[in-house]
Length: 310
Image (cartoon, rainbow, N blue to C red; front, side):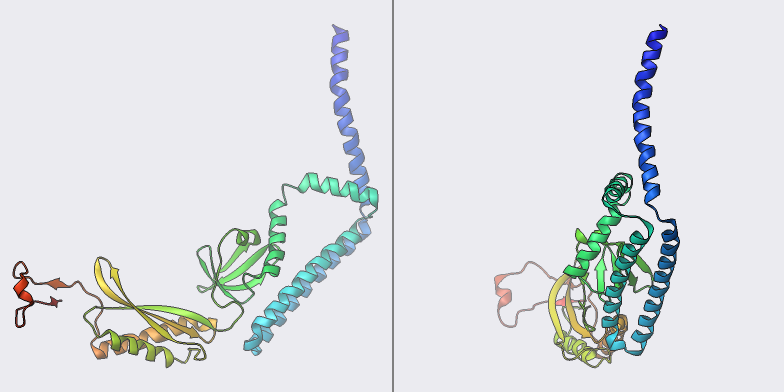
């Protein structure tokens, strides 16, 4: 019996010791690779990088306020500079903090891959997606974008995420890899001007031609309109809540995306005031009065024909 116990003990302790010894050796080798003086220097490099990025962002904000027409170009340049600074800082920190040779590279690569592979997979995916966004350019910094139920301006494209400033002045952070599989709608794609669509509804018994002229005049006379591009009004008959209406869809361009809501408000106020003066009414349920079954002789000249009444 004691012989069996000793044999079992040796069988269990052997593998454990075999596992512990390489693990301890690997940790010792990994510790020997670290340059502790370089780690202190790396911390200074990281702090200097953070300070440099703050200076770049503040400078871009001030220049964008002074040169409004160039703010998209300035923001794009700032994004490229940030990518270069990030990559340069990462390479510098690694070179300062580790003694890298062939064995060290193999050991460091294996340890990092096993220990942090699952933990950083989303981060790596976002990093690769950020590079794809920069190359494919589905949108740019400063564009007005609709994504995932959010609508606003792209303010930054980072290594991990994209920041959007909504029209309600909320900052939304979206991981880069989300843009690879979902659909993104970009309103201006690098231009200052952007098309804005507005819907107006009137009754089918109203003066639709006059209503269209009023909407067109309200758009082209607004101080926010961008006249080098066309202004059009599309007319169609639609069903709104089970009754017939005439939809007039205005398509016009605002001269700057930041004036989108001011443009919509200005045009709507002008149209509502003109509709009131011209007695152009909104849609309403129409009732037809019928005295009896329609007979063929009702179509003869002079026959009574009851039209729609409101």
